[in-house]
Image (cartoon, rainbow, N blue to C red; front, top):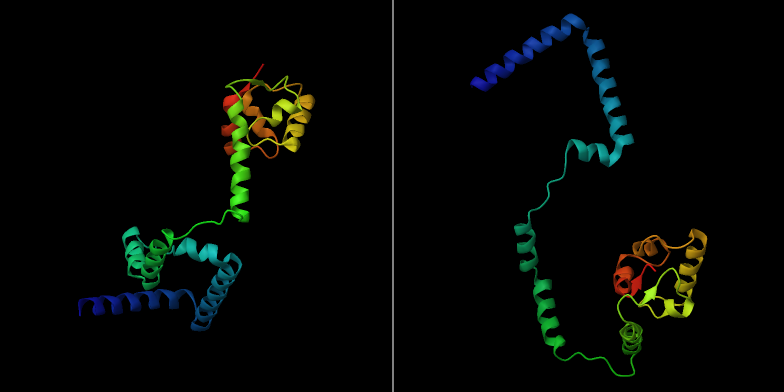
Length: 179
């Protein structure tokens, strides 16, 4: 009852203040323009504005875990994976097996190298190809980069070359030296 009384009192106070400033038609027009303006903002701002004003609730980790555990599909999938994992094997003439063998053979080329055995500022293409993850194309890129820049100032600078990222650099870093 108290809230109802307070709300009615507030409503009449606001109504009296608005009627002193505007006529009823002006007030309706003002509300209409504000509504249209807000609609235009929502339309132009789209989801970003809406989600800025009302951020979505993020489900907590416990609720997600319970939902995954309650899923019948997840339970059946786990059972099938456990059953099949013991029986699954790749045939020896499989394409997957051949690709895996080629990948391991490529990584074996680094076994013939000793740590810090390739000077990056003086090595030729044949020496650079011995690095893990480096083929003829990448070796040519290294040589081109080196000739344009006048040599490498640090071993990490080799990551500026297209095709050499953090992962590939970590594979070859142990075999490189500056001079």
